[in-house]
Length: 295
Image (cartoon, rainbow, N blue to C red):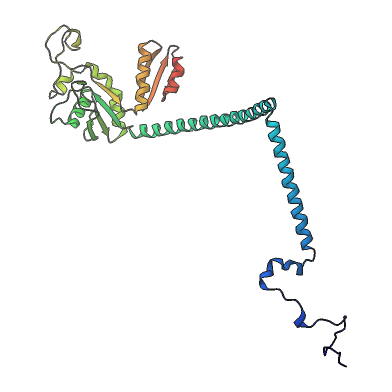
């Protein structure tokens, strides 16, 4: 049955057709949460409201702090409290750094001592002879062999190598450089060190005639007291080849002997021996150990 307008009236309870369901474009994806959570709009509003309240509270606290900091007395109290806190923290950090530095210093000293021990061990077959004047085209192997023979030690072919060590003589430092001799075996070095005291009785000018020995007179002439113009050598030494550190220790020990703070000192196998005033023997290899005896 048709209506006067010619259109069919759909009952109010009838479902909508697919063509009449409202469509949402793909651009509405930001608002599509309502399809899954009908209360999403309410939650968003609640979150926004709480955020506004938090911001408001923060602004209120900020204003209160600004107002409080205008009070000079309160500002002074806060400044002192901050300074105390910072100072305590800095003192703690400085204390920790000092402990760390002290630990590193101890480790460095131990490493230096270990390096010095290794270096000294590498020199265990070496001796130094001097002072013997230098000359052109000299043969240090021949000089060392002659000196050793003069004290009763025949080193024969036991020299590995020999040479002068240090800077050449100059007008400001005319002293001849010592001769360093590396032997092929420790037993030759030990024999020379044991017999070296015999050099006190040796006229080395005859042992090494090629050297330009200075002319000594009077008391300086050890072999002909009272004579003048005789070409004789000054005292010649045979010493162990020590590292720079141990050479400093040995020199310091000799100074203590001259100052009569110790009775005697000598070296053996790179170790400095010291005899104290109480006749006690001490082995030292570092200045730290020697300073204990000097106190």
